[in-house]
Length: 200
Image (cartoon, rainbow, N blue to C red; front, side):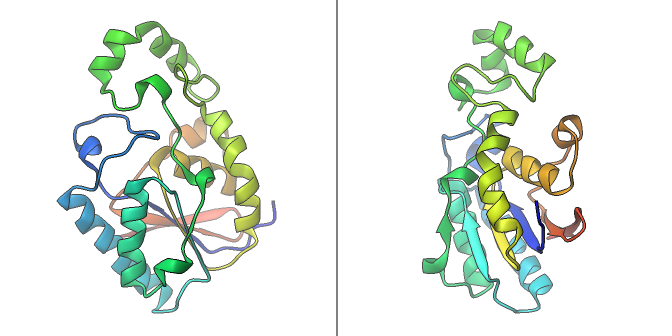
């Protein structure tokens, strides 16, 4: 994969289900007041890094929480929201039957499949869900396109952003799974398989 960058890789702000410790996947809840403040802080931090320059491309997941975050950020960095592209391949990993559930509910209803997935998180999908490996296959084609563009903003999701960073930095599956999922800053992916964190 030829990589230019920089890509500014951003996770959406805190949502109602983030606060309630529920898996969201392809289901959606709106940003909390804290999440809206985080989105604004991310926008101002990005504007500072861009030095008021407008990015060339702005991509977002089409799921509501990402779109809400992306719209707030685009307003702050003066990117025309009509030019934003929503890519279905940037959707969060779907946890299938676990979408919307908290850990207590998953263990009560799906203990066997939870234990199975825990033994191989990368390759094992939740019931009717998607594995990290399947999500990587889904994201790879668009990432190959985006990697040769410059000054790109992406607003997506915790698990999916880990996969993007893992691909960019040539990390192993286990290294990718161990990455963080911050909402108080974003990662800048740059040439040379490198990244750095920008606090918001």
